[in-house]
Length: 142
Length: 275
Image (cartoon, rainbow over all chains, first blue to last red; front, side, top):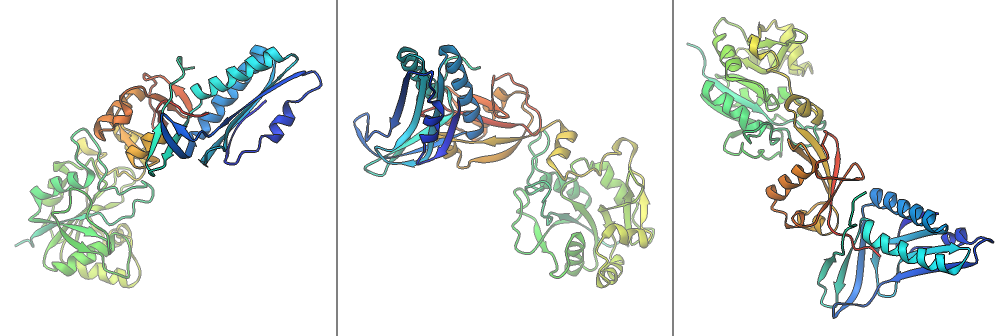
């Protein structure tokens, strides 16, 4: 049960291993990968940066929250640095006794990470121009 | 007749403990930096004010109009500046003043000037804490030059020790100004003296790009994280700080009414876009 932020390329194998367990029959994982387009523009690269101290703290809190809520084994790892289309940006896994909790927990964890963890991305387009992308904040600060 | 009195503002120190140039540090509500405040104090009592800088150093903000006296190469510390001043104007007396004495009032300087003329080479205040001479808010008469040179040749470079050995005329600080010669060497000194806080600011993403740096240290009198945000948004005209911005203090999310203390780390957070 952990949340990691690492330089690209990230290695999720050990996280994945840490989640498998004989009492878990369902294992769902999500891979967020760099898309080559955004609002009609061709994306050639992504730069991710994180406010590491707070991001790791907040990420761990979310992993714990989801783990308890659905009684699953969960973990996630997010990349920072310069990524190209197709590269793995985030990996989220949830293992549960049955598939339903695993699906729900995995979905909830990636949604929460996007909302609440201080990570930002900057897209670079074919013309060399770049832009910081902004999503939305967690509705209620903790 | 007394020799003319010139002012020498010492701004050649390296401010290693402060982490930034002390002369350009703004302290107090009037917006003056320490260099400007010192010039304001020296001008009424001196015929002319010179700026003492080390070799290659540029004048701090607000002090650019002063004539510059460069440190003599070969020796370091305030004595280098004082000797260079005597080289420039051997027949003048020098009111030497460090640029980090924000509490020196006109009374303090006037009393020094009024004590001239009894044949003393050095006129200084006795420290309110240990009674020893305060050499960096003091008058050096032309007759002091040869004495200083003699000490410099023996590698005695500490003006305080020289003043002790040479029996400088010592004055008592005016009773209302007993703190006048406390200097500001560290961010904590400033905080203690003025109630202002030293805040470490981290910038990320679009805000780092707009601000043009990833971290900085800011002196502020803002009471809360939210007031500090307002202050930075206005001072630097940062559009990224307007609109939906969250605040973290010491690596925890914080509300705008979170009180600030000196040494706090503050980060402003634009909406996130991980995943």
